[in-house]
Image (tube, rainbow, N blue to C red):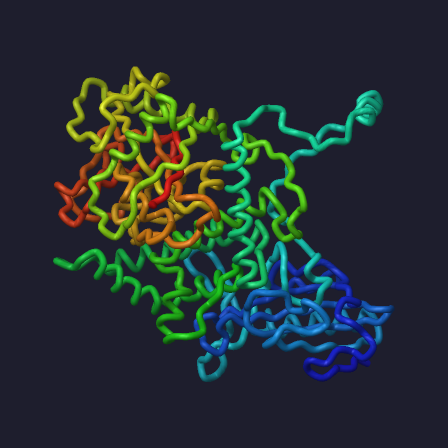
Length: 584
């Protein structure tokens, strides 16, 4: 018969590091079968003060031939539950001694189900069914918990920290097995560390290491704050299913509550936020996402302040998307949960970044030209920025597979426009460009311009590896900083783009810097084609009929300080340069 020990009581004669978890991690709701030995869950009621940031951990343990069930609960915070012989302050735990493995597994499953399926119910939101907390007779949500699929964890007993899950990570193909002759030959070779086959510039190698290390450190910081890192499959589910579902709700709210006559953009966004916070379906999605991915929900402040921080509102959704991209990049490239290596392996920047980068010497003709062009691309209208621009590095970017699609798009737009003269041209452009040899015949007709795209340093690596992409959203949804629809945004003023870098006192983004590096921006060739010139803010998901892009200039939209260019096809741009700079 099972024997329950008192709260915060360790079985006599045992040490925390003697207990080992027996079984795989639970990965979904109700996944507590006999082969499961560890489960991590988070409260699905993150808006409620009494449930804010609560977690529940359980495991089937064995120590010296004796079976136990271990449960642990508390508030989400950084640091391991057991860094030594004593538990972390503020957490609760309980051991239950069992007569057999079967009894332990049955008790574990029963306890987990009571917190999970016993208190959850399904709810239809749009085309998807999601889990929400059941309500009691008084209409109050029950203290229900969602199973988290974790790549790493800092909750539970010490053995839990070594349990890792790479579900969803695309693994590199294993090299073909060697022949006997090859094996014999390899044995005779020196055991020195393998080096990349190419002689990469040291500046490129340093950048690759810093970008990879930066996303790793960013993920570690989240892990230290929450104690968990989700699996790639969990990240993908949230990023590709739940966030678009939230955007669908935001779109519905925006459509039902259009901008009023003489209402400013900021006033409309504040009104929409109030409506989003009170929307039952959006709240349900937000609670589920808050439980599935690592986020610290503020316990202080009013209920509205907590809701504003947790809700998948138009203010939050893009920053969450960027965070998940950084997590995914870290999981894809390195197991950042292990202890730091004493020596760094040599890396292949082309492979790591999925791009070919070349450092441009600032003293070279091209380096001087690019620095002059970049510095000149500004109207000097952002008074909040302090300091003098200092260009630290410029890298030329080649991504043949994606660049080829851009070249084809340029030719296609040029042929479509034929002899049509396009009046509107991008402003703050270099007088002439000698770096467009591959599209020289079509660049002018297709109205190609040099655009600037600012982003947080931790997102440079994911973007280089993939591409600038359209936000995962639907038309009608309003997103902070995206006043002209849901495309890829470019500026022609570096001061405007600085606001999205998360550096210093940047305006639209925060955090995501890399230690020892400056802020980063992309300089891209962009197809403007025949643009639709916006006269006010809007929610375009594609250019109006017959147009190739959307542009917003201050001469047409009085509230604008700087020009904005929006494209809706990722192939209408190619990244040409990465600029690293700082403000002295």
